Length: 106
Image (cartoon, rainbow, N blue to C red; front, side, top):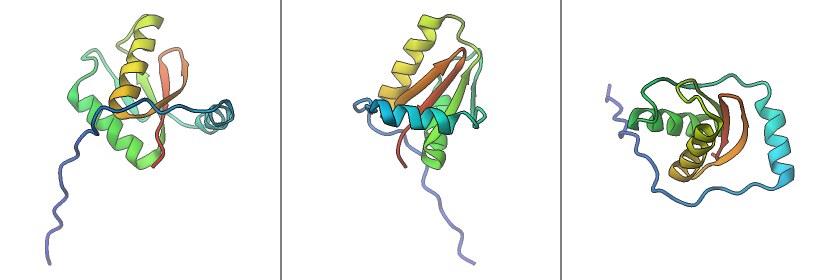
């Protein structure tokens, strides 16, 4: 049996934030309603490992929820969402409390 070699996951090049129309945003919010957070952000903040995990989840699911437990203020969570969308070439669909909903087409 030949072993399967999986190349290491790399983050995409920092690109433009994905823009959504109002109709797309409404549809994605409806889909996200039933989802549970797949990535939990703790006190360590945004690390390379966290970015890789979010990248892995976006590749697998396209639409994900991220729980930012370690971020306390609304402004900090908004800044985090902006950084994540730019760094991962994704779109921020919604932000409710400490839950961020991110989308990138698969």
